[in-house]
Image 1 (cartoon, rainbow, N blue to C red):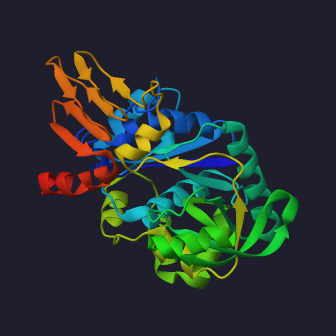
Image 2: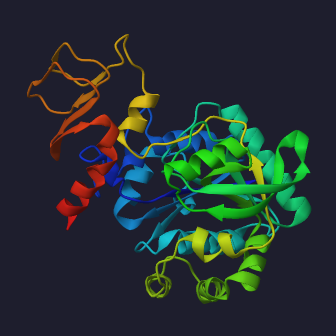
Length: 346
């Protein structure tokens, strides 16, 4: 199986740790390796062939963090054109070099997963289903609470009950809490984590049938003799910005989904990040030097400068100090950090 790691985005909800110049997938947030490096570690369990798609301004950091990858395996977008064209770019490169029937797993660089064995087993099942049935196969996460921050996959019709494989009935956008509660209690829904498995032939066939504009984009790129030339980059920059879920996946009638057998977290806020890092007996996490606290509980504090940071008598807060800014937020509303980060960027 070929694996493509999608390493884009700016991670605005983790400002000031994550910035446009150095977004969250390049950061060491949960251990001694960056999120991109841990994604690579997982990908290496799926097969020997790994590609990373990244934006041009981050390509140097990607090369520095993954020196084991050959230069040709780092696919550099000249500019962001959404996940749909990011995937088409990868499909074009893979179709030039590999068997068109070999399964390709598309994964993300900013997810936190501990059970790497379960991750590999779930993708092996998805690859087998995709090959056998010639269909794009998704991997969904069994929901553990009624999240309003994730999209949902409705499953219907068992393909293989023992391996947790189902037909996809429908997709649901991020629901309100009441609707999410109904989804979770029904047992028929999975969180949509954006993982897809299918061969180049399978993806291209679905594009011909359900997303002809994407297939035309593929034809434009594949007709150019060499990837990475000015002609290629100009053609790519002329493409529009589309999300793969809306442009293709939600239009496709013949989809399967594998219920994941591994833990999963999309670290989209400091609350999410605090949930997955080690904590002391009072629920506190401290990272950095010169941190001074009195009577604190359930706090995330990170100091990346020499100046002292003092926090006294607080609960349920995030305090982050970096050269790019200072954040102080209640942990449960820390996802709103993106509103500030976007204002600063504009």
